[in-house]
Every structure is written in C-alpha cells, then in structure tokens.
Amino acid sequence: MARDYVVGRMNETREELDKKLFALFNDVTFVVGKRAARLFGDSLGGAEVLSRIEESNAEITGYPLNDIEQDLVNFGTALVENKGKVADELFDILVPYYTGSELVVLVTFAGQLTAANLFYTVFDLSADDTGY
Image (cartoon, rainbow, N blue to C red; front, top):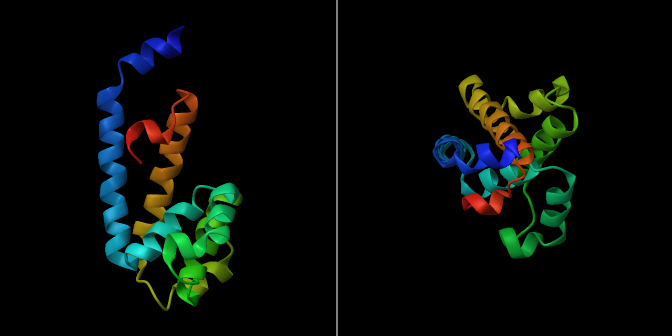
C-alpha cells in the first residue's frame, strides 16, 4: 500500500513537523503563559478535547479558568469549529491583552496544529506516536 510506503520513510518529516510545532508552542507559552498555552492548544483539538478539559479541569489545571484563559479557549474553539473564520467580537476581546504580533503567533500555532492533525489523519498516525 502506498500509504505504508510513505509512512515508513517519513520519520524525518515528522521530526521536522514536531520541531516546528513545539517551537511555536514555546512562542505561544511566552505570549500567554504555560497554563493558558496548554488550554489554548487543547481547545484547538476540537470539542472532544475541550469537553475533557472541562470535565477534569482541576486535574489538568488545578483551578477554574480565568476570563482571559476562557477567551483564549473560546477563540481556539471558534478557529476549529468555523474553519478559521472568527467573529470580530472574539478578536475584539483579545486585542486589549495581545499585540498584533502576538495574535499572529496564536493564529500561526493554530494553523500548524491543524496541519499536524491533517498530516496524522492522512497517514493514519496517532499524535501519541510522536511524543505529544
């Protein structure tokens, strides 16, 4: 099968994708903090991941989301659910907290994470196989 052939020869590609994604995640962490970066990243995973976060919020984060974290989660969820189209109201909520450059970092990370998810889906890989 062609997919097996490609999967067997793409470790280097996966490593490069992982490096880029982790570098962007570090940038997001610098912008919003470790906890908020994790919440934002999880929100980009879709509704299933988001509901898991809400159900075990104390276990993952230790305490409820503050307003800014909730706004980031809402933004990430909207990016996923609306395929990148986000209402002006969501941007307007974030503008007082983040510069234009910082918003670019957040959206770039969302795009890379989406690309990584597509990559893993096409080649029938689990994110767990890559150490995430």
